[in-house]
Length: 517
Ligand SMILES: Cc1cc2nc3c(=O)[nH]c(=O)nc-3n(C[C@H](O)[C@H](O)[C@H](O)COP(=O)(O)OP(=O)(O)OC[C@H]3O[C@@H](n4cnc5c(N)ncnc54)[C@H](O)[C@@H]3O)c2cc1C
Image (cartoon, rainbow, N blue to C red; front, side, top):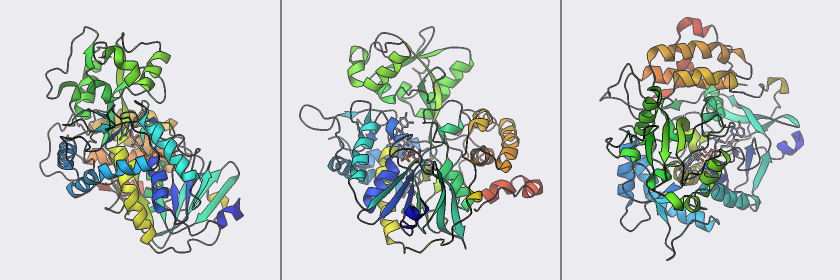
């Protein structure tokens, strides 16, 4: 295996094979590139689970400027306007690119794209595929395209455990596989490892998505941004399944409403009602549950009998829980769903660390601000993959680290199980100083321990520090002890050193949190 990897030295390395990783590799072609993926291509990814679709201003009465306005409104004052403008403008062309790559989008009888409506969108602009199996269809097409592209080397079953850094620049990656540990020398690495839902007790994300790329980047010295902004989806199917099956917003877009066990439509007076921004709906549901009520999605009237045809995957999930969504109330609870924060990147996807880029959910581009507009993440990944690829291709290829690091330096496989309770209690839908401080105290020893919980705890700790520092409520970050908005608020940035410094000299003595392999 070592020989096999040596032959690939010097190529750009993409970590993760969801939509962001696959698309970046395809955009780099014919430049040789390596994809390292924990699972088989597209496996264990949020991408494969995406239901609703991709937001793009394709309708006759739509315009990128309207898509931008909705994105900025949802982002609650913290979007990077220039980036949001570039991405919303590029979205329609990105859909054409996907069609050319073989994605079969749903179309109306006249051949025009079938466009759905989702929360906080002022127009029908959600293009979908295979009904509510959009992610599965895109992954199918991209995996096929990657497999027929000879310049892309695919290493499946490889989990990257550390970035190798020398003199402030990336020189390689350290990975583990069933065949043992290995390092790959490269001066160009793209983190495309997805979201952080696996850090929570209830999440719609596959368990493999627990922010490993963010921990790798932080340990290597890269700056992370907006970590405190975590989107909770208001309508995941209640129960103990992992991941929690998602009942897409598109169901509410088709007319389903939220009710409690008494039949009270408790969000009816909220501006936008059930289609208010996700954070508003999630808090409304959370508070209703906290009052001791049960909460249901009522789709019996709308979409009613059309449910199974429009939402086949959701129908299957409900039926496996013993429910018919067209005739019965669907019990729901919020679940951690999407991370607006991530590795801080510029317009080309470059991080603060030389040789490190990020793309997809792991990146903080500035599109989402404090709250993501529904269906803006797949499109962000597709659009930004092109810009990341151009930047990576334009960067000089260095040799990377030539000596093989000792396999003893490979950390154990990370496991977020031990951190889920503390993370869920401290940085859930409603936060306060006491809860955040107790989460930090619980996570600090785990982060310093060097065991399987170390990387997940380190990231959970950084999220809690970012949430503690933001003494206001905005978008998806709600502090019960600081319920108002701070008019001067800005995006937040945090490095590992800053997070540790927040705990004073005592934390400095715990520096065995190794930053570099
Ligand atoms: C249920 C659900 C429904 C959604 N619906 C929509 C929707 O309708 N529209 C929309 O825009 N967004 C939706 N989203 C969000 C969207 O799917 C994600 O934001 C997007 O797919 C993320 O893509 P990605 O490529 O960045 O990450 P992912 O698709 O999660 O891929 C990351 C990959 O990296 C791998 N990986 C992680 N760490 C390592 C490592 N150390 N070494 C090697 N490999 C690693 C993982 O195994 C995974 O395969 C949904 C999300 C979920 C969970």
